[in-house]
Length: 420
Length: 188
View 1 (spheres, one colour):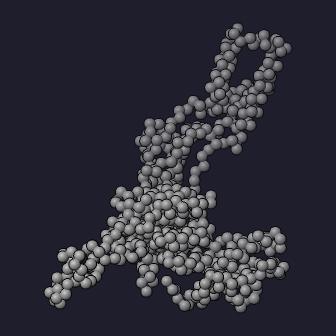
View 2 (view 1 turned 180 degrees about the horizontal axis):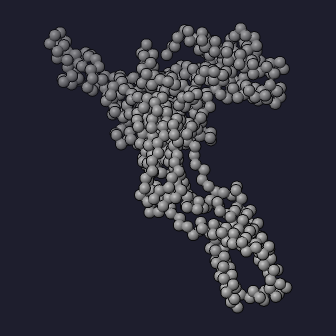
View 3 (view 1 turned 45 degrees about the vertical axis):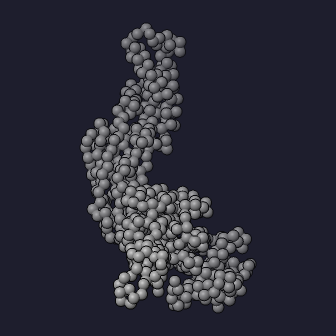
């Protein structure tokens, strides 16, 4: 909590002294009396009690899972949890930076006695993606306005508007069979799902002989099941400054990448495959692949709150090469990489190609940040499609994701193309 | 410091009260006699107050106000559009200048050249080297101005001055090439 003197009454001291001096020089007692009033004003802030505010904030949204374009009402309640009067309290709610307030204001000025609560509501327009509210800013001034406290509240309560649709599958590589429960390798062995039958070999287990076929044909054959291998998947988000691009009136690419990553975490964590999260941006961020609900919650928390995934663009350039080295160190030969990037520069394309050539199965999910209109914007579209082609030529699978499209539908379209 | 000032102020008030009560602790009469008359004593005190007023007024100016500025979360964060830097370059007056705009002009040409190579590669299904050679030889388009704009090392003065318009034309040519490629359908 920051505490500062506002210096609001500093001028009054000067005025009081000038008036006093004139009163003395001109022998005018009323002016001296007036100077005395000024002195009272100047002294009051130091004499008035200074209560450090203890403010509680509760935020509710009318619909946590709206459709794109829906208006969502946000209600905020502010409570004075301290013992002193909060004579001048200003609260500005932490509206998700990517959303617009369309009705009322997300701010309130009020005075609260101890235990008292005040509420306000405002309306935001939902956009595609997952949008987390930020802590609200609270400024409390004393009665004289000479001292103020500034703090944020509500950081512990993670309020979100999730304007996405759940995924039924993830675009992980099918050396593999897409199925909830596992990623199965395309190799016969011991498992539960039928893969093929082959000629019997004396070293085969008797339990794997296809007795039905033996009864019908008299031939001994061995049944093979699809071998299940746990394949770890690392979901990486490109959150460098160059990725913060977006068409007018649409959510920008990094927000879409982060919300896409969260949906992928959801769907992949329902399998037994370890899932991890990485991010390139302000700083390299990594959550090593692992399994379990607690791990999935941690992945969500990181994607929602880590500064690398902030919805405001960073200002400093990023050493992608250095961050890529850290990423490579955390990959093993069985790790698949799902990279979410709008492909706004060649650097990220080179990285994806290098990883693919190094033997990691790379899939790039790429939200479209381009727009029609000016020559620059049109060139941006061409460049992006060129980069997609370069990736495909290197064997990287690409999932183009249009601005007004649900991720599930982008996956469906890409999967159909892959299986053509 | 503030406590010292408060103590001094308190002491001054006490002295003032004592002097009005006629106490001998405060040698008001002696001070007045030393200065010549009581008005000069008042003027001296007033002078001290005026000096203090100058310091207090200077430190209390409006720009010394130190209040929190609250955020403005009503509007969404804005990001530039993809490809927006080309538009900025094309609207820059420096781009047309023969010497001063050389660096900026080369950046624009490099970017357009890379886009042309990538699109030729896609549309003709050739290698990157072949596509780069076609662009370098100016064989990738029938538009002479555009072909020379990307092929020549040194632009003519006319082409230099017309850089923004030729660059816009280049984007259109690259787009038309891409349209012919998309008619062939996606490969992967």
